[in-house]
Image (cartoon, each protein chain N blue to C red):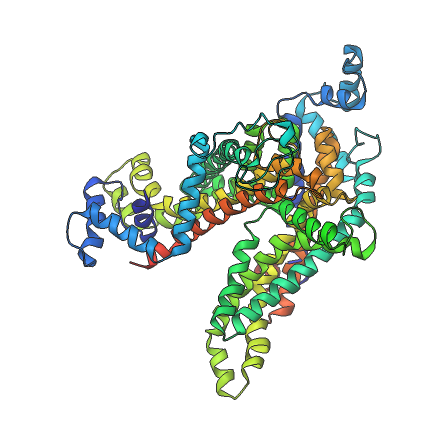
Length: 316
Length: 319
């Protein structure tokens, strides 16, 4: 996966081609000190890259934990996120309850862990919508060119001129409330940047000599697009997707903080904070600690995006 | 120059028209019957008379073909009439106009804080020769763009209102009530300003003219502030132009956190009530702010950087 990103940014030709992909894998082995089969050297290279950057290592660990929490919340906590013990309400953070308990005596840590599922699902949908719709707009605009390019890009400019939160709010007004609807609204609001990057990349790759060569060999437009243009244009768009992951978490949590996300008992991250807001004066942990989870996740994905965006290809 | 201004103005109007069209498409085209929503929002009881519904549909023109509706609405919007807000029946423009001063105060203060704090951070971080200070300062902007705004606001309230009692936690009273909301709103914006300015300062310090200035005997501070900063501030200006729309939109969250009256609170209430004319008005207003600030930035640019010459249109000489 990350290998193809590197190949994409380096602009090597025909990454999708099996033979050339093998060549691409073989290159770092030839350059690096470690001899041996390509894949093992590759793993070693990733490990060395990570160990030299402790911040990045922590970021990857945080993200792995969050993803694990989303799929297997029972690994982290055995307490019920929805049922509380009323006699144990407003307990501060401590051994029994890491993040304390809320007004109904529910364990806040358990709610944060179980909330990861909802928040991550919404974020993934948002990024996917932006990636697919924006990518499609950009690729069509860049590949077809001429008036199609003009029309699509003017449309994208207009999307950029409306502040993202306002656009999301307009979509929420039209679509209604709920995690998925909020996610789609956030995704549509970041379509424009994906379209721009995808178009720029397609334009760059389309002018490369190997694309011209494959055209002159008589390749059809769809095979040129699928085998040569798309694989080589994918890199920066994937980096943008990682970056967008962080901002989508923030946007989704902001909308659910405003009350447009999942209905009350569901422990969405933004909803948790807006619930805790009512008890700000006497129970700081109800807002501070769930927010810490959001901040840590966003910080981690942003750090990883930065690593993908240059550090990785520069260190070769 | 005049030709350039006219051209840019025409572009701005074009973008506004398109933004209106997009908001029309989003709000009037998508599933969910606007009339049912409006009727539900306007009345206390859940039951709505079908005849009344039909009358409402006729009143708002929803029984006509979409294109006719669009043309009618656009015609009114051009004259500054965005219809009446459903929740209180007042014209959308006056609802927005009444809410605006509080929000402008907030966003203006936030912009000032963002530029001063973010810019100051970038200047100090690139100027200092202490490695630890530089690394500490440069690690702040990535943190600033990663924290949820509403969380920062709540933490500030917790610390400075409930613990220290320095500032009021809620409401619009005076300068003291403005400090925490403005600071909250300034965090993500200031972080982005700092990131861009630090990067362009580092690029500028590598340029040949910096070398020349040093060779001529200019001091480190003078080179940094007079030569490098002046050139590096241009990209930052562009970013500030792009961030103003984000600041206005950010007021939705910040005004909700601090229970301040303003455009943000009005917007949040309008979304909750599915008040379509009002939401549409706010969206177009957001686009207007964005287009206007970028127009100003574009027009100021040639004044700040004499290298940017607005070339007269070639066709002009033939005409």
